Image 1 (cartoon, rainbow, N blue to C red):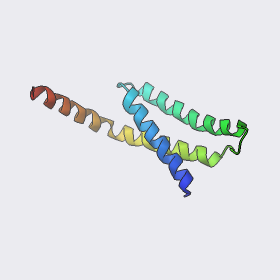
Image 2: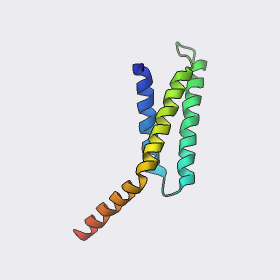
Image 3: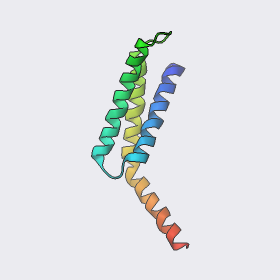
Image 4: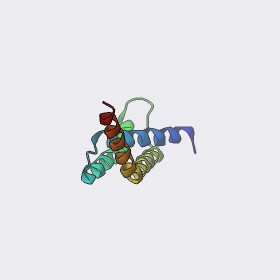
Length: 99
């Protein structure tokens, strides 16, 4: 695994987790929409590079690494969202009780 591909994977993993954390709001349709937007961005950002006038080129493997990072982030978020919601509620309840 090249260092560059690992960077692509990690960036899109983090991007997906952050977007889901910020925008999910309890609607799975929104979560799937976020994933689709990020996957489209992974492909379009590579295509855009092929049109730049300097030394950049589209790389299918970069887009695949981006998509793999996004999908992994989505699956991890999906598997842990109930736990995260319960943890958030416990923190909120404890904060209110300590006032």
